Image (cartoon, rainbow, N blue to C red; front, side):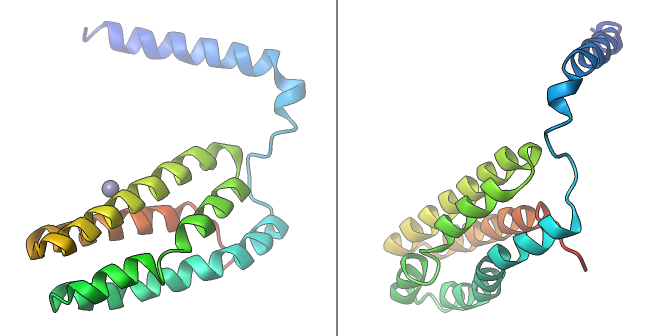
Length: 149
Ligand code: ZN
């Protein structure tokens, strides 16, 4: 196995090179970098997502206070539109970033669902752990979005 791995990666490189050179006319049409214009366009879609990220501190406060009613209301209310905003944003990214962004958004909302379930069960430890996981996925999502600054 130890020998096989470098050979396999070499084969992969060769195959990829071959594929790229064969399909270069169509490949050239797929954008692979963010132009400043594109980034400026993305910024308008970013603002509701960035403001939702700022609101995550409010959610943290509710969880720490074991205020389960407000925790659940918050997930379904202020964070309710985030899913749609993230889906729209994911589709505006470069083709190579779309799937990772969609996966992270999906992950994030699975953590919100678990926080919601934890709030229902008044399970403080689980809610806090899921909150931390949600923050990780949220920040990873934001890291995929280019900025001009
Ligand atoms: Zn996760």
